Image (cartoon, rainbow, N blue to C red; front, side, top):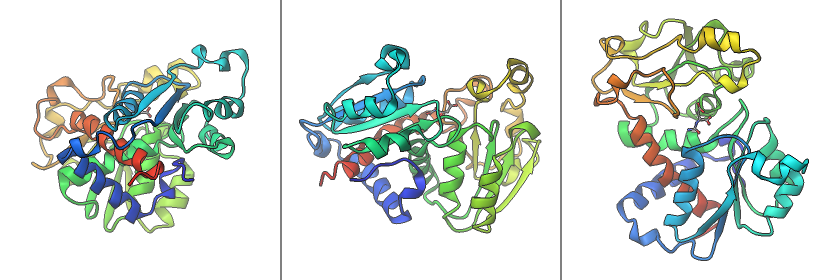
Amino acid sequence: MRNLIDIKELTIEEIEELIKVAQDIINNREKYSHKCDGKKLATLFFEPSTRTRLSFEAAMMELGGNVLGFSAASSSSTAKGESVSDTIRTVGCYADIIAMRHPKEGAPLVAAQKSVVPIINAGDGGHNHPTQTLTDLLTIKSEKKRLDNLTIGLCGDLKFGRTVHSLITAMSRYKNIRFILISPKELEIPEYLKKEVLEKNNIKWCETRDIEEYMGELDILYMTRVQRERFFNEEDYLRLKDYYILNKEKLEKAKEDLCIMHPLPRVNEISTDVDDDRRACYFKQVEYGKYIRMALILKLLEVE
Ligand code: NCD
């Protein structure tokens, strides 16, 4: 039985296969509409979510399956003091596969050790978010037609942004990738990523405070929200929250085929005047999220 806790658990070949299946689903929706008849997906969300939870549920429904779950810890027995392990043992009696989001780093890994059904990490604290990364990879592959030879700018909260951590880990395995890490000093990527991913894989990368400095060189600009819920004090959040606001003027030097991405939700970091720019891909990215999750569910449930 396979889980998906960290994006590293998937080989490059497996990711390629998932992308192929997702693209086939996009082109042949009918063919997949009964693949999961009689199967159930549980979504256990101990933290807020719109896209991740609903795209998982929509994905399972489009495969013919059913969904159950909860969308807040307060409405589950967690509020009575139940442990993650006991919750998982329980839900394993009702569902064939579980997508779980939790504020504690490592909680889905603990869950996987206890579970009798596959566990998908739908975000664990400020750590990882592998299915957002699969979404991002499908978006990049579909929009740029490649996953190598890319200069990728990541901007905003690179410290707490779990989507950034998983994306850097995944993209570091492709050829000729260069990262431009754009953040305030306080929100730089964690040391472990610099040492164990960037340096270990000999990746080209640099850090800057200035969103415009490398704008003309970027193939991808990945904007992120400052992760308020991970801050230790509100003052720091208020000081940093509007550090970067992408607008039309800041895009003046950008390439014609730049792909602007954002895992969403957006707060202020992309001005709405960018939404109708051809290069804005973040709402397409939302749509890709459902298809790649359909492909992932099929893989983990070992459906042909
Ligand atoms: C992200 C998350 O939850 O980490 N959202 C998502 O899943 N698309 C990004 C965020 O909350 O800022």
